[in-house]
Length: 221
Image (cartoon, rainbow, N blue to C red; front, side, top):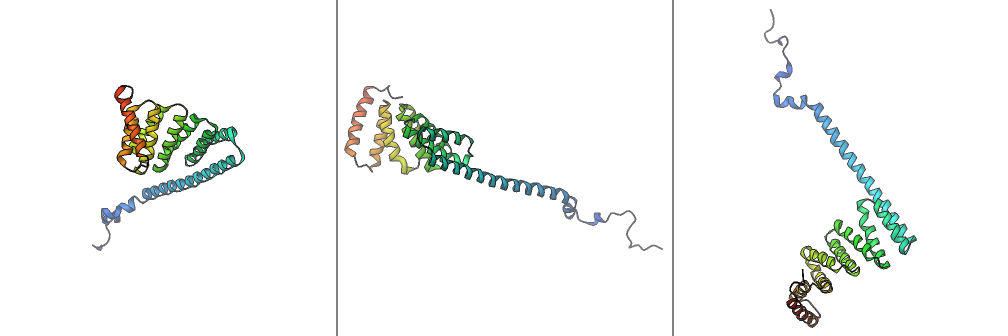
């Protein structure tokens, strides 16, 4: 006589485990595979970070060597070659040196290009400084209208602490470009700010520019 409590032939013991508890057992292999992939990716990313750091340090070391060993046009050529192969994290420093070297050589077109490159990737404060540098270089290369466009973009987005500096440069540059209304607007903003030391000069410029803007309303585009 067989025992009625003995396991039935062919019965699957796993069937007695609730479904929600069987899932980890059934899919542990897939879970382990996913974990391995994640760990491999994390390890690869970490190694890439170490590689990038090494490349940046290498580029910065090369920059120091160029600055110490070369001057003038030779330095500029070496810096231009270096920035092409440098990782993104090192380019701002190299472009800053390019801008300084190019300006010293009177090559304001190259200086403007270097400042623009910095402004596209630098943090907010440095982005504004780079924009001011770009505008100055453009103006010195005879491209006052382009400099005005750069300064107007800065005026719309730069931190408040830079407002007076930007407006001062915008006023002078717009006047040099013959854009009377834009120069007038910049001077008026400076006066409205109230924190000016040469109020009488600003008043004089406002009066002169208002007369020019009224006489030639279509000249300022």
